Image (cartoon, rainbow over all chains, first blue to last red; front, side, top):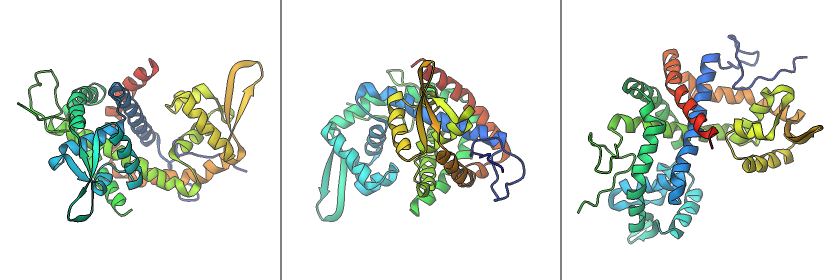
Length: 172
Length: 172
């Protein structure tokens, strides 16, 4: 009886298993692990950098979206799509950010569908204060560790994957 | 008065700002955004794939670690390091996974420091069942969308970043 279990991460044979599963080979596996690890460790590092400002990474993402939007406001449904979270989860987050004075919710006269999240003056000032620290952190821990050719080739690799995944997400 | 605020993600000028901040240029910015987006969308897709098995992505990560460890057991402190989470957060998660019958906690006679997380037979069977689905998902949404040269060059780019971040994390 074969009691061995293979994981998505375990060393892989060339031929598929009897059930058709093609395990990752060593090269694929180390990339997948590095990708996961960099993602998690960067998130941790970004969180640490934002902590002194009382912000979580998701708060920062929302501040970025709103500060770049016309009139610094976005419909809640669009903001949920842009930040890749469910409407209910976004709603909870906006409630917390509202309590911190960073955003407000506003209805839109003549637009029954419309509930907007709007950046407050305090939210805007917070962005101005935090952004330079954040961009230095992005450089120090990621961008400045890559050569220009690596920056463009990694982008060329990731962009079609992002397109594919965005399409899937769109279909729910 | 200049009321413009730049974010880590906004278009960047070549020279640094007066405060020395070197904003991301267009190439750097699109890579950073693609990296964040792929990370978030992949996590979403992996979660969806695991849902039918009643697992979250963090559960799966722990099952992988334990299934690859000698005797399918790890000291809690080592498991926290391996899965990049705090001891208290891991403890909550192990409590949930214990309730689901996937793992147990065991003390170690003669080792006063030692509290171990141990994969149960049910946890092992769950891994065997889930892993083929998970690896197919990793292939479909990430690995199989890359050419072999892209797989090795992306790894070469990410590995030093992972090393750097792991070192930082180790220093607390």
